[in-house]
Structures are given as structure tokens and as C-alpha cells.
Image (cartoon, rainbow, N blue to C red; front, side, top):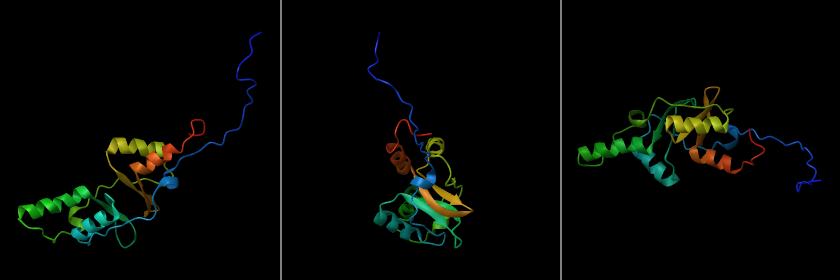
Length: 152
């Protein structure tokens, strides 16, 4: 008779983890406004060590996203005029075709969206209002906490 080295396997109930965007998104955000000067945005990006963020109106509705790449347009414009100029407003440089997600979206879906859209961050919107932002780093952080037998 052959005996298993594992002994008697007793089925156990495993608590499944459902990983949602709302569990890993940032909620204390640096937000920008369309009528804000682009140099103010550059200062905040450097001071806060972030690569961009949502642009919201007075009702906390996302109207765009602004990033370091968008700020480069002002740098190039200044080079063209052979001097730094501070005439640009966020509304002139922000991306307006914003891809947003719901707080209830699975982290796996968010990871897939990052690969498909080639973006670095998504605003998280609930009932038309900004409630958070999720970045690629947030998704990686979520996966680091996974246990192989408890995710779905």
C-alpha cells in the first residue's frame, strides 16, 4: 500500500478576495482647474513628485487630464519664442478625451485597460463626480498582496 506524503487533505473554506479599483485607488488627489496657469501645474508636479492629474470643474466633474507630456508643449512654445512664457492655461494643454473607470471595476480589468490604452492613470468616477484615481503602481501594489488561492 502506498501512502501519500500529504496525508489526509481536508477541504477548507477559502475566503475569496475580490480586488476592486476602489480598494486601491488614491483618494487624496492633487486636482487641477481649466483656468489654472500651466506654470502652476509644472510647479505642483515637481513639488508633489507626480506625473499628472485630473482637471475638474467647480462641480468636481472631470473635464480633462493634464500630464508632464502636456506641459512639454509649453516648454516647446517657450523655446520657439526664445524665452519662457507664462501665458498658457491648463485648458489649452489638457487631454479632453478622458478614459475613466468605476470604483467597482476589477483590478484585472484595470490592468488590461492600462495595456490597451497605454495610459499611466485613470480617474475613478462615481455618479459623475471624481472620487479617486488609479495608477499603474496602484495595480501592481494590489497584485503584490494576492495569495494564489484567494483571488478571482
